Length: 115
Image (cartoon, rainbow, N blue to C red; front, side, top):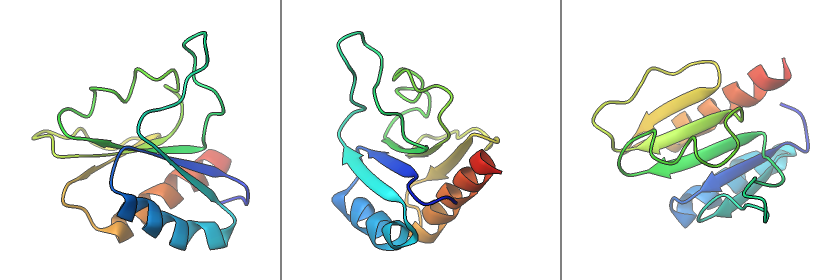
């Protein structure tokens, strides 16, 4: 993991943001929390993060591909009945999840993106 990398939490609990900031920011990472990915006037998202963490209550495919950041590695947290297997750019966590699992998934994605 390189210092200065950015993790963007989309939706989710403020507790998740607090845990990620407490664990990742001392390592030189920056954590932001938004209710939806920001977009510029052209419909394209601005300032892509190094990793997205997305909370979804229905299907892992519902919003994770519609934000213009299709190639950004992501952790998708949801209560969907069927979660697809993880791949090189995505990790799926079912709720309830452990924060340790979330941090590990983020670290793996950051490491694979820089390695």
